[in-house]
Image: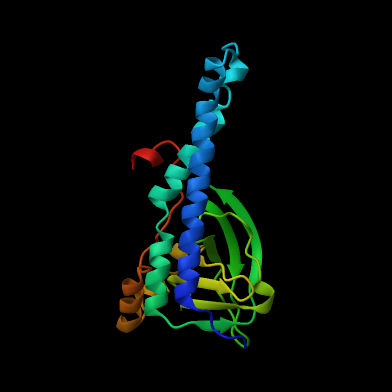
Length: 207
């Protein structure tokens, strides 16, 4: 079994990656919006093609706003890591990925040898990166409660993924019937309720 990761270092690196990713996207969106004005000021004719970069620029900034306003997973990951111990899982089954507004949602399972019925989990990178989970071939470290959610740290990369059950309602009976101490720990970690739901594309900005 590999050595447990340095949680403080993982959190700091994830926060830095989140800040860097947000800054790059903000710079890209702002540059695309400002580009037509710079071109027109330099004498380029004001045509449809000239102002076209404004559209993707606004999309980039809107997407960033949605992710920052609705994505609270990094702070909750820190709470989970304070509340739960790390457990080594020698197998991670990554089933697929979907590109959604709040991030790229990865579907995976964390089976345990000799046990059946591991829940399908919805996983998002705690930073704003959208890449597919890497480094899971060597296993991963999990902190949390599968019925409520938790944190996954692949051994080979040190990425930090926030997990909650993909079919949240399906595990409601298990959560309701859990021992008081188990529910209290989930509440302390901030995972007693569904944390993130994909926002309505029309009203998300105004929520």
